[in-house]
Image (cartoon, rainbow, N blue to C red):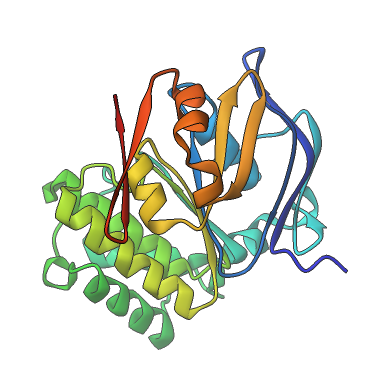
Length: 257
Protein backbone atom coordinates (compact mmCIF):
# COMPACT_ATOMS: atom_id res chain seq x y z
CA UNK A 1 0.00 0.00 0.00
CA UNK A 2 1.30 3.47 -0.89
CA UNK A 3 1.57 5.60 2.24
CA UNK A 4 2.12 8.94 0.48
CA UNK A 5 -0.50 11.65 0.94
CA UNK A 6 -0.35 12.79 -2.69
CA UNK A 7 1.13 10.98 -5.68
CA UNK A 8 1.84 12.12 -9.22
CA UNK A 9 2.56 9.21 -11.55
CA UNK A 10 4.03 9.94 -14.98
CA UNK A 11 2.13 13.22 -15.22
CA UNK A 12 2.50 15.30 -18.37
CA UNK A 13 1.02 18.78 -18.25
CA UNK A 14 0.59 21.19 -21.16
CA UNK A 15 -1.02 24.59 -21.56
CA UNK A 16 -1.59 26.35 -24.87
CA UNK A 17 0.61 23.84 -26.68
CA UNK A 18 3.48 24.44 -24.25
CA UNK A 19 4.79 21.51 -22.25
CA UNK A 20 5.09 22.48 -18.58
CA UNK A 21 6.21 19.16 -17.13
CA UNK A 22 6.80 15.77 -18.65
CA UNK A 23 6.54 12.42 -16.85
CA UNK A 24 6.38 14.04 -13.43
CA UNK A 25 6.68 11.55 -10.59
CA UNK A 26 6.15 12.98 -7.15
CA UNK A 27 5.29 11.60 -3.71
CA UNK A 28 4.33 14.05 -0.96
CA UNK A 29 4.07 12.67 2.56
CA UNK A 30 2.14 13.94 5.56
CA UNK A 31 3.95 16.77 7.33
CA UNK A 32 6.14 17.74 4.35
CA UNK A 33 6.48 21.32 3.08
CA UNK A 34 7.09 21.75 -0.65
CA UNK A 35 7.87 24.72 -2.88
CA UNK A 36 7.35 25.02 -6.63
CA UNK A 37 9.93 27.35 -8.15
CA UNK A 38 10.48 28.47 -11.73
CA UNK A 39 10.51 31.57 -13.88
CA UNK A 40 7.38 33.34 -15.12
CA UNK A 41 5.33 31.11 -17.41
CA UNK A 42 7.02 27.91 -16.22
CA UNK A 43 3.67 26.53 -15.07
CA UNK A 44 3.67 26.91 -11.29
CA UNK A 45 0.03 28.02 -10.98
CA UNK A 46 -1.22 25.55 -13.59
CA UNK A 47 0.52 22.70 -11.80
CA UNK A 48 -1.04 23.73 -8.47
CA UNK A 49 -4.47 23.76 -10.08
CA UNK A 50 -3.81 20.31 -11.56
CA UNK A 51 -2.86 18.95 -8.14
CA UNK A 52 -6.21 20.31 -6.89
CA UNK A 53 -8.08 18.67 -9.76
CA UNK A 54 -8.99 22.01 -11.35
CA UNK A 55 -6.92 21.55 -14.50
CA UNK A 56 -6.78 18.31 -16.45
CA UNK A 57 -3.40 16.70 -17.12
CA UNK A 58 -2.64 15.27 -20.55
CA UNK A 59 -1.11 12.03 -19.28
CA UNK A 60 -0.59 10.18 -16.02
CA UNK A 61 -2.59 10.33 -12.82
CA UNK A 62 -2.75 12.25 -9.57
CA UNK A 63 -3.94 10.42 -6.47
CA UNK A 64 -4.76 11.35 -2.89
CA UNK A 65 -4.06 8.46 -0.51
CA UNK A 66 -4.01 6.19 -3.55
CA UNK A 67 -7.40 7.35 -4.87
CA UNK A 68 -7.40 9.21 -8.18
CA UNK A 69 -8.56 12.80 -7.82
CA UNK A 70 -11.13 12.51 -10.58
CA UNK A 71 -12.90 9.71 -8.67
CA UNK A 72 -13.27 11.76 -5.46
CA UNK A 73 -16.55 13.73 -5.13
CA UNK A 74 -15.90 17.49 -5.23
CA UNK A 75 -17.35 18.17 -1.79
CA UNK A 76 -15.25 15.43 -0.20
CA UNK A 77 -12.16 16.67 -2.03
CA UNK A 78 -12.75 20.16 -0.59
CA UNK A 79 -12.55 18.71 2.94
CA UNK A 80 -9.19 17.11 2.13
CA UNK A 81 -7.47 19.68 -0.11
CA UNK A 82 -7.57 23.49 -0.04
CA UNK A 83 -6.05 26.16 -2.25
CA UNK A 84 -5.06 29.78 -1.80
CA UNK A 85 -5.49 31.55 -5.16
CA UNK A 86 -3.63 34.69 -6.22
CA UNK A 87 -6.93 36.57 -6.34
CA UNK A 88 -9.58 35.87 -3.74
CA UNK A 89 -13.04 36.89 -2.58
CA UNK A 90 -12.28 40.56 -1.92
CA UNK A 91 -15.24 41.75 -4.04
CA UNK A 92 -17.87 39.80 -2.08
CA UNK A 93 -20.38 41.96 -0.18
CA UNK A 94 -19.50 40.33 3.13
CA UNK A 95 -17.77 40.95 6.44
CA UNK A 96 -14.48 39.43 7.54
CA UNK A 97 -16.12 36.91 9.88
CA UNK A 98 -18.70 35.90 7.25
CA UNK A 99 -15.91 35.35 4.75
CA UNK A 100 -13.68 33.25 7.00
CA UNK A 101 -16.66 31.04 7.83
CA UNK A 102 -16.90 30.13 4.14
CA UNK A 103 -13.94 27.86 4.76
CA UNK A 104 -16.17 25.61 6.88
CA UNK A 105 -18.83 25.00 4.21
CA UNK A 106 -17.31 21.75 2.84
CA UNK A 107 -17.64 20.28 6.36
CA UNK A 108 -21.08 21.69 7.13
CA UNK A 109 -24.38 19.85 6.92
CA UNK A 110 -26.19 23.17 6.33
CA UNK A 111 -25.51 26.07 3.97
CA UNK A 112 -27.35 28.45 6.28
CA UNK A 113 -26.35 27.57 9.85
CA UNK A 114 -22.83 27.56 11.28
CA UNK A 115 -22.19 25.20 14.17
CA UNK A 116 -20.49 26.30 17.38
CA UNK A 117 -17.44 24.28 16.27
CA UNK A 118 -17.37 26.16 12.96
CA UNK A 119 -17.55 29.51 14.74
CA UNK A 120 -14.81 28.53 17.20
CA UNK A 121 -12.48 27.44 14.39
CA UNK A 122 -13.20 30.67 12.48
CA UNK A 123 -12.49 32.88 15.49
CA UNK A 124 -9.29 30.98 16.25
CA UNK A 125 -8.18 31.59 12.67
CA UNK A 126 -8.98 35.31 12.88
CA UNK A 127 -6.95 35.60 16.06
CA UNK A 128 -4.06 33.60 14.61
CA UNK A 129 -3.84 35.97 11.64
CA UNK A 130 -4.49 39.11 13.71
CA UNK A 131 -7.87 39.84 12.15
CA UNK A 132 -10.18 39.44 15.15
CA UNK A 133 -10.46 43.22 15.64
CA UNK A 134 -11.58 43.53 11.99
CA UNK A 135 -14.28 40.84 12.20
CA UNK A 136 -17.20 43.16 11.29
CA UNK A 137 -15.36 45.11 8.58
CA UNK A 138 -16.52 44.83 4.97
CA UNK A 139 -14.09 43.20 2.56
CA UNK A 140 -13.86 46.23 0.30
CA UNK A 141 -12.53 48.28 3.22
CA UNK A 142 -9.46 46.05 3.72
CA UNK A 143 -5.96 46.71 2.47
CA UNK A 144 -4.27 44.24 0.13
CA UNK A 145 -2.26 42.81 3.01
CA UNK A 146 -5.34 42.42 5.19
CA UNK A 147 -7.16 40.64 2.35
CA UNK A 148 -4.24 38.24 1.95
CA UNK A 149 -4.25 37.47 5.68
CA UNK A 150 -8.00 36.87 5.46
CA UNK A 151 -7.52 34.48 2.55
CA UNK A 152 -5.01 32.49 4.62
CA UNK A 153 -7.38 32.50 7.61
CA UNK A 154 -10.28 31.26 5.46
CA UNK A 155 -8.10 28.50 4.03
CA UNK A 156 -7.02 27.45 7.50
CA UNK A 157 -10.64 27.15 8.68
CA UNK A 158 -11.13 24.63 5.87
CA UNK A 159 -8.74 22.28 7.73
CA UNK A 160 -7.68 20.12 4.76
CA UNK A 161 -4.92 17.52 4.79
CA UNK A 162 -3.07 19.22 1.95
CA UNK A 163 -2.74 22.97 1.40
CA UNK A 164 -1.80 24.51 -1.95
CA UNK A 165 -0.68 28.14 -1.84
CA UNK A 166 -0.23 30.31 -4.93
CA UNK A 167 2.16 33.18 -4.11
CA UNK A 168 1.16 33.39 -0.42
CA UNK A 169 3.44 36.38 0.22
CA UNK A 170 1.50 38.62 -2.22
CA UNK A 171 0.72 42.09 -0.76
CA UNK A 172 2.58 41.31 2.49
CA UNK A 173 5.51 43.34 3.77
CA UNK A 174 8.68 41.50 4.81
CA UNK A 175 7.78 41.22 8.49
CA UNK A 176 4.30 39.85 7.75
CA UNK A 177 5.68 37.41 5.15
CA UNK A 178 7.89 35.78 7.75
CA UNK A 179 5.49 36.02 10.68
CA UNK A 180 2.42 34.76 8.84
CA UNK A 181 4.16 31.89 7.06
CA UNK A 182 5.73 30.79 10.33
CA UNK A 183 2.32 30.99 11.99
CA UNK A 184 0.66 29.11 9.15
CA UNK A 185 3.26 26.35 9.19
CA UNK A 186 3.00 25.94 12.94
CA UNK A 187 -0.79 25.62 12.66
CA UNK A 188 -0.80 23.00 9.92
CA UNK A 189 2.07 21.01 11.42
CA UNK A 190 0.00 20.66 14.58
CA UNK A 191 -2.57 18.89 12.36
CA UNK A 192 0.17 16.87 10.58
CA UNK A 193 -0.97 18.44 7.30
CA UNK A 194 1.23 19.10 4.27
CA UNK A 195 1.52 22.05 1.96
CA UNK A 196 2.96 23.12 -1.37
CA UNK A 197 3.47 26.74 -2.32
CA UNK A 198 4.24 28.27 -5.70
CA UNK A 199 6.52 31.24 -5.26
CA UNK A 200 8.98 33.49 -7.06
CA UNK A 201 10.93 33.96 -3.82
CA UNK A 202 13.81 31.50 -3.59
CA UNK A 203 14.65 32.66 -0.07
CA UNK A 204 11.13 32.01 1.23
CA UNK A 205 11.30 28.52 -0.25
CA UNK A 206 14.71 27.92 1.34
CA UNK A 207 13.48 29.11 4.72
CA UNK A 208 10.11 27.36 4.97
CA UNK A 209 10.22 24.28 2.72
CA UNK A 210 11.98 20.96 3.16
CA UNK A 211 11.42 19.86 -0.46
CA UNK A 212 11.47 21.70 -3.79
CA UNK A 213 10.04 21.06 -7.26
CA UNK A 214 12.09 23.21 -9.63
CA UNK A 215 10.58 23.72 -13.11
CA UNK A 216 13.38 24.07 -15.66
CA UNK A 217 11.32 24.71 -18.82
CA UNK A 218 10.41 22.54 -21.82
CA UNK A 219 8.86 19.97 -19.49
CA UNK A 220 12.04 19.34 -17.51
CA UNK A 221 12.11 19.51 -13.72
CA UNK A 222 14.10 18.62 -10.60
CA UNK A 223 12.70 17.42 -7.28
CA UNK A 224 14.32 16.66 -3.97
CA UNK A 225 15.25 17.99 -0.58
CA UNK A 226 15.70 21.75 -0.47
CA UNK A 227 19.44 21.68 0.10
CA UNK A 228 19.91 19.30 -2.85
CA UNK A 229 17.85 21.28 -5.37
CA UNK A 230 18.65 24.87 -4.40
CA UNK A 231 22.15 25.08 -5.79
CA UNK A 232 23.73 27.88 -7.80
CA UNK A 233 23.96 25.62 -10.84
CA UNK A 234 20.37 24.39 -10.83
CA UNK A 235 18.86 27.80 -10.01
CA UNK A 236 20.97 29.52 -12.65
CA UNK A 237 19.70 27.06 -15.25
CA UNK A 238 16.06 27.40 -14.18
CA UNK A 239 16.01 31.21 -14.03
CA UNK A 240 18.49 31.74 -16.89
CA UNK A 241 20.68 34.06 -14.89
CA UNK A 242 23.61 33.70 -12.53
CA UNK A 243 22.48 32.98 -8.98
CA UNK A 244 24.79 33.14 -5.95
CA UNK A 245 24.36 31.51 -2.55
CA UNK A 246 25.41 33.19 0.67
CA UNK A 247 25.66 31.32 3.97
CA UNK A 248 25.16 33.45 7.10
CA UNK A 249 24.99 31.47 10.33
CA UNK A 250 22.05 29.08 10.03
CA UNK A 251 20.57 31.07 7.13
CA UNK A 252 21.18 30.51 3.40
CA UNK A 253 20.39 33.41 1.07
CA UNK A 254 20.23 33.48 -2.73
CA UNK A 255 20.67 36.51 -4.95
CA UNK A 256 21.19 37.25 -8.68
CA UNK A 257 24.80 38.00 -9.49
